[in-house]
Length: 103
Image (cartoon, rainbow, N blue to C red; front, side):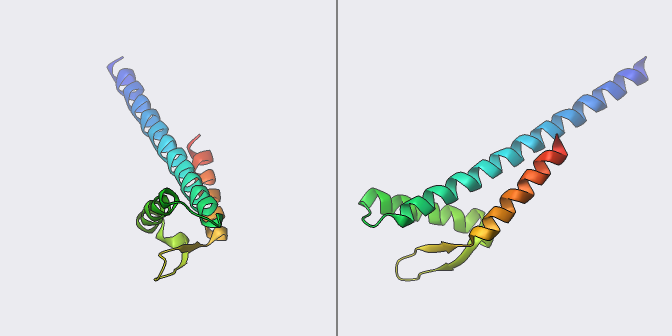
């Protein structure tokens, strides 16, 4: 009986770890989607308010620190990033695959 309880506890622990990993992957996927989408939308605006420019800078810093592999180049004068959308899509696909493995 004690052995069965230990096995049950181990199984519960593994399940909790898998759920945590799954949640982390889903959160990362959502972050990549949200950050790059917002950055792309702001970058396409012809006339940007000061708030838009500040938000773009914040997003650019976040992309540079969290997802540098998505940056094609950075305009040194303006600080505007050009992103690899194909790499973004590939990253999202890999995250989807990892999420499916965790389910």
